Length: 411
Image 1 (tube, rainbow, N blue to C red):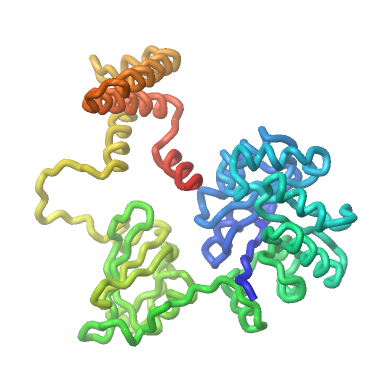
Image 2 (cartoon, rainbow, N blue to C red; image 1 turned 180 degrees about the horizontal axis):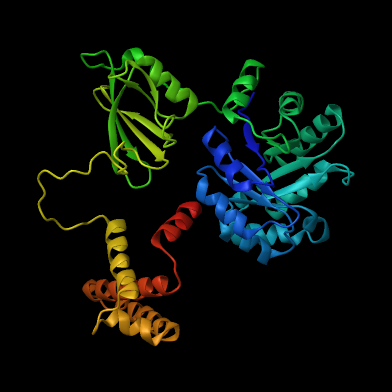
């Protein structure tokens, strides 16, 4: 039996908070679907989750598809629009790739689900969602026909956790989306499915704790980092129980040497650390944990426990992201605190049209420089372009964080 992807649908009354909870409790993806998907809600949901976001509802044409994906959805679900104009599948797939296109199939409206699925694959769909209220036998037949004729991944939609387990076992779908089931822990749901013979995605350590080299206190040293910035947040320790609980729950659990007990980071403060990766070093005596930090890691209120400088020498920052952010911060400071004689303030004072004109001119300069055999000139022109681009970003209130997130989504 293949692995089953479990996707809870967010609570329409409180979509952002329910998405956050599902993300933190082990969802493989999160689904958001309304009669007319709100682009603002998609953006807000994407801000609080790390797993893929599927979105659909009221998508009629390619422009709607673009808006939903640009708002942050990883995959768009096409429904009624496909029955009216099947070419929307091809247009969306050609523009954004099949991995970002799902098509829902209402079995009540289709005479031949297999033939429809085959056509959807030809047009460029990457996944199919089966909607039906009929019994297991009908669904099983439909899933078998769809898989046989299209070889596409198939997701089924259910309205309760009990139905999810029964139907996943009966129809052998690749993924299950659960609607209107209320708040629940995805991790506990996965455990129940595992007990009942199904195979959801559950984190497992390939190396048993016995193979790690422990310190003199019988514990494993843990270095914890922010998974986005790689900033070191703290150093702590784990016993076997703490390590196994961390792997199982996806929430960093340490052993408190002072209290002599397990310590779930965040239980008291709410500043939980959600696991993104656990890596052991070459000697197997130090664990590197990359996490999504909620709030601050340090009990003093600092984001990181490492905030007291002892020895510090001046050096040039060469991390590209830090350089971009530092220059952008200077530009934003000029906007908030104008400085007489500043070229940046001159651009802000002249307004958006002047800034756009400079961005266009610098683009042209790059093209000209690229034809020059000396690469040095191109380096200078690209630097000029990036500076003016950041002025434009500051003028429109856009940050590098937004840009890098978008690039990562495309990756």
